[in-house]
Every structure is written in structure tokens, then in C-alpha cells.
Image 1 (cartoon, rainbow, N blue to C red):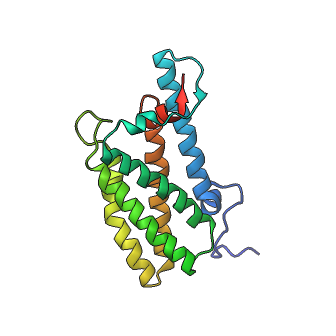
Image 2 (cartoon, one colour):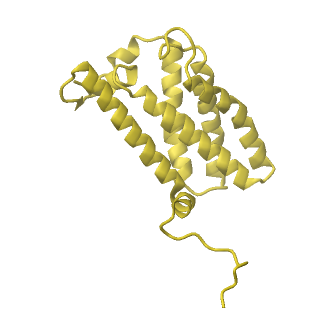
Image 3 (cartoon, helix red, strand yellow):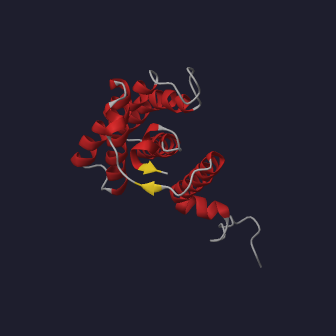
Length: 185
């Protein structure tokens, strides 16, 4: 006889099982796919030909110091965050890199409040991520200090993927500064 009251485990092919085991990978895949479709649509609308990879940092020298600080903070946050996600947790190395990441994320989030342009001269939806980051960063630090590792991991990982991946991909859309630094049509 089967016990109907016993909890059922999720099938290995169910979305819930995939999300539990590979949630971050699914998020990355969805973000990159969305970015690729949006970029392709923008480039097709402009009638742009083939896109080629090239690195030209000269436009970076012509922008405001606030935007330079924002880009430096974002690039450092991405590099440090990637190292933190892939490395061993809880050691001195993790803590030192973690506090450095908090500083670089703070610089990135706070500097974004002085930048507009995606939505004319007003704030865009990406600025909500910056506000969210300014609020959640201290909460994630407090969670780590209180040894609530699950909460700390959830908040830091969501900030990395939300702030770095989603907002970062928006900065690489055709026509934006980061696109011009790395690509040509």
C-alpha cells in the first residue's frame, strides 16, 4: 500500500527540482538569452550589419569622473563577486574579499544615483536595483555577523545576480557606452 500522507519528492525533470538545483544557472541563461534577443532586435531595427569584437577604451576617457567611478566599481564588483561565488566560504580570504566587494558595490550603487541617460534625464528602473542594493547590503552584512549564513548567502547572491548580471547586461545594450567600448558594427 502507498502512504498518501508521505511527502512526494519532486521529479528530477520538474521545474521546481531544476530551480532548486540550478537556479542561478537558469537565471544566467535566461538573462543572456533575453539580452541576445533584445540586442538583436535593436541592431536589426537600426539596420546594423555584423557586430565585431574590438576593445576601444578611448570613450571611457571622455566621460565624467562619476561614470568612471561607477564603471570601475561595477567591474571590480563583478570580478570580486565571481571569485567569492566560486571560492571557499567563511575563511579570512572570503571575509577580506567580501568587505572589498561591499565597498565596490556601494560605490557602484551610490554613483548610479548621479547618472541618468537611459530614460532621458530621469531615473530608470535600473535605479530601483541601486536603491535595493543600498538597503540590502547592510542587512546581508548583519546576517553574516549573526551567523545567519543562509540569509547572508541568499541576499549576497541575489545582489550579485540582480545588480551585476541584470543591470550589467543593460549597460551592454547597443548604443550604450559599454557596447561602444567592446563592439563595433
